[in-house]
Length: 277
Ligand code: 1GP
Image 1 (cartoon, protein in one colour):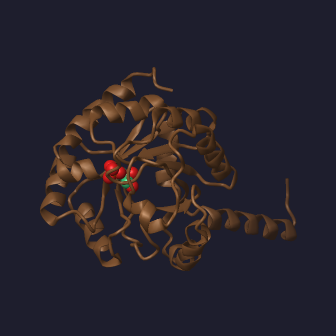
Image 2 (spheres, protein in one colour; image 1 turned 90 degrees about the horizontal axis):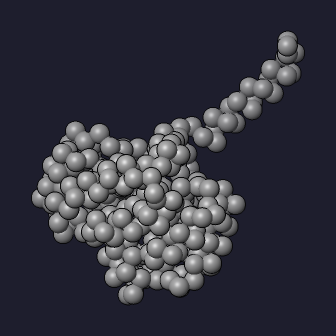
């Protein structure tokens, strides 16, 4: 079919609008494809404000032997200047896995990373963390061309006050109320979030309950991330069998980097076992 000049101009505008909305989506595509084939993923969280150079090098050495699927960099207490050297060290280590920013605040942006989770704290009612910080960061993110992944972030009560609950000044979801968690996750998905993150908080006493993971997973279409307080292959397994598509482990690896090998060995066995949801 031949198009006239006006139609061609219109068509090109639509194509450029598509490019504008989604310049790249390599990391999200990877997570989506892994979900489609039922292969759960593990992300190592590195908090540049907490990890020492020695620990980071130790962890990267072990990661070279048993690479995780992704590395997240960020934390609620790290300052902006700590993020770039941390990302550069990971990139220069020769490790091939993608580095994704998991920002504790809007200043934790560094274009040297592969993607950024644009977190909206949808379990809370702090307007700054639902849209305010995003407005402050928007132009810089847009200009950088980094892959931005809209993520509905949900804090879940975990037995003690976590840094993220304190810093965000929000109340976590009650851990026994799986239905409220499901409603919140679905609302996030309807608002266009590409990922939902169930978070017990770094160093949580209790991880997100499997019943809550299962309930959210049973109705959600977008990939489900679970993190906070996962410090053993058993807890990792519980999260995966309950339905997590991507599990995040941070604190436990800062204490014992060698745990990464055990976790990755477990991941391979879960990937081979299709009895998980
Ligand atoms: C925290 O979910 C992550 O934001 C990881 O938690 O440090 O407890 O593993 P941990």
